[in-house]
Image: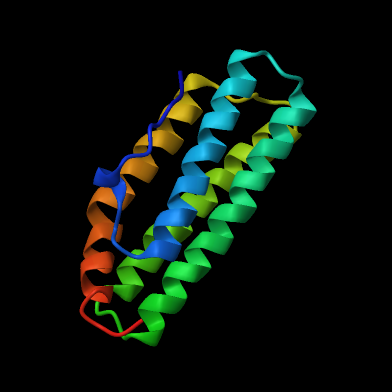
Length: 134
């Protein structure tokens, strides 16, 4: 069992972005499996760091598309990315300082945020990007 099942309903219609979303889904699922399997803290911490770094890379990809094509909702979309990164930095720092490990609350946040972000914010961006030559 996994936290998120990728399916076409999560597609935004831009191949590169969809592939990156699939990678984020896989990372959240790996984190869930590690937590369920009671993996050691260092391994879980490395997965959170990998997720954080990949999210930053992914957000840069989206933001480059939006900026290049002058997407009207760019600033709002970028702010949502920043808010997510701040939360993941907090999670990572909490794990590094031994205050926490990954909990279901954290996994639910990551899962809900990604699905909601794709289904609302990213799908609007995807519709826009399909109208321009990318």
